[in-house]
Amino acid sequence: MYWQKRFNESNPDEEIEHLIKEIFKENNGNYGYRRICMELRKCGHIVNHKKVLRIMNKLNLTCTKFTRKSRKYNSYKGTVGKVAQNRINRRFNTHIPYQKITTDTTEFKYYTKDQSGKTVIKKAYLDPFLDMFNGEILSYRLSQRPSAKAILDALNETIIITKECPYRTTIHTDQGWGYQMKAFRKRLKDNEIFQSMSRRGNCLDNSPMENFFGLMKQEMYYGVIYESFEELKQAVDKYIYYYNNRRIKVKLTGMSPVEYRKQASQLVA
Image 1 (tube, rainbow, N blue to C red):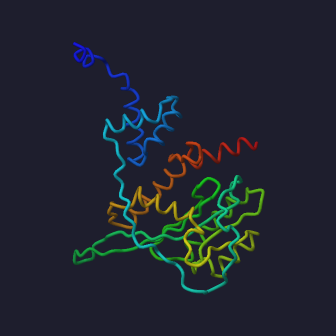
Image 2: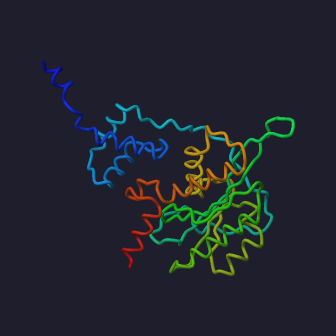
């Protein structure tokens, strides 16, 4: 009789289960129980993280994204211009928006067919500029080859945005050829921006950018076959918008980068 009564009872967690499934689906299966717990709180539902984990296990909601790594693109070509000192020196944290910016180049692959129907592997290169304050991508360019124009176009857009900073901005990079070139250094000097460079071959000196690349590729690239540059570009545009505006971060107290920046500006005002 006890079990018969239990089977006839309504599910008290039906609403929470539905919300958890919706949050998991909206974020393409990228959220674990901690981020889902934060999203529930933003919706006004205070649920213990252990209960969220238990419900996710019950609903078989598990992140199945690929974690395979590909060979890292290396833009280092030796000393082709001027190498700047490491001003950041792994001091990545800042409470001031637009004060510390970092950038790097990463490589993607997509697959097309030639006239004979044979599959051809092609490459694309992403140049984003990231604000260390909140991890927000301020500007970026995706090009079909390593391009000085792509780097400078993204830099120009970032310079316009960072003019709002009350302190002098620093832009941190590795020692790639694009950041040693005269045009890049001149653009920084003309706008009174400090230039900072990692030590050669030391990826930890630019870990905020490396972390973003790893996260992005895990969530939208690994395990997916893109069949044209246009298809890849649409996926990159969609992901960066999602990352800036929707994807919450634990270190930002459960807010997205844009939400965190807006809240910080309100507190200052």
